[in-house]
Image 1 (tube, rainbow, N blue to C red):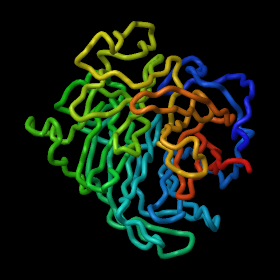
Image 2: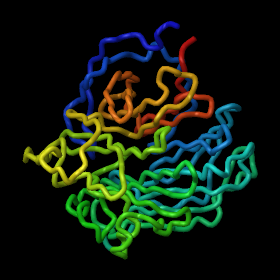
Image 3: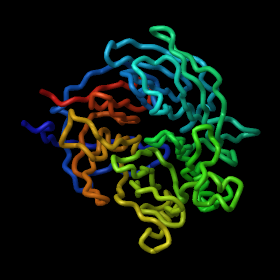
Amino acid sequence: MKPLIAPLAIALAFAPLASCNAAPAQPNGGKAVGAAGFAIEDHGIFEEPWALAFAPGTSVLFVTERGGRIKFVDTVSGRLGTVSGGPTVDYGGQGGLGDIAFLPAEAAATLGRRTIYLSWAEAGQGDTRGTAVGRGTLVCEEADACRIDGLRVIWRQDPKVAGRGHYSHRLLVSPDGKHLFVASGDRQKMTPAQDLSNNLGKIVRLLPDGRPAPGNPFAARGGVAREIWSYGHRNILGLAFDSAGRLWDLEHGPAGGDELNRVEPGRNYGWPVVSYGDHYDGRAIPRPNTRNDMAGAVISWNPVIAPGGFIWYSGDLFPQWKGQAIIAGMVYPGLVRVETSGLRLREAERINLGKRIRAIVQAPDGAIWIAEDKSGARLRRLAPKR
């Protein structure tokens, strides 16, 4: 078989991110390549897409746009459509409509009616806001339109605070469908990430209806702590289970120090006490190896890659990538591939796609779908070039 990707020299010139004002990232042990080995198809233009999700058991891909719109693409027929009944979002900065998720047990040949989860930035009293997570019923009765019935908030960041950054609000349903994990960013307030009396800078584990899941590590403390799974997080933009059922998160560091973490219950991941990066004003932050009581990353990046999300690839179209992490990059304008050997990881390759990539998802047929970042973003299907 011919190699899928041909080497290509890459010149990097990037604008800074609002959440990661850092120098351009360079390959961290992996080779930089171009996109010549891909067959790339474009499937429409979207305005500030944030998340992608296939409805389980279907070829229908749903796209959230940060301004509050939800759209879908039937990836077989090419049919486009819209979804009504979404939430009112507090748009601005990094805020707006966020993630979308479905229950795996509701897979069906047609969409019909199924449970849908959404996350978004919600306004509070005064100049405050925070993440909200809602659950409703997705109803698809027309070829080009669906609606959400009975959307209600089942979880909120507590407390709501000023500012418009670090919502995280990544959603993940466990493979068995019994739990909903929510990534809750530190909202750029830093110190709450170490405080178990609030849910900022945490990963929370809920029941599908939004109640704290029994067996969470801090349940005996009562209050908000009942929902906390792990803490000491900064700004989580990726959350995924690997094929062995292990939970991983991918988060933005400050000036340097993006992290891929193996997430375990009750562990403290260090922010803002320790980090692989430093404060934007140049003040040093102690490194994780100075605190044995805090979990270190399995792999980190300095300079940053500013991830937009990631998948653990399990398809057949790219058999050589099975079991590997494929990361959407925003400072690096493309994909970052991470090889695995058990719990040991190493960056293997960077694939330059010429644009910041906000979202990534694996299709049922094993193709990789990506959404570019910001206004006028292309939705693209990547498959091997035959």
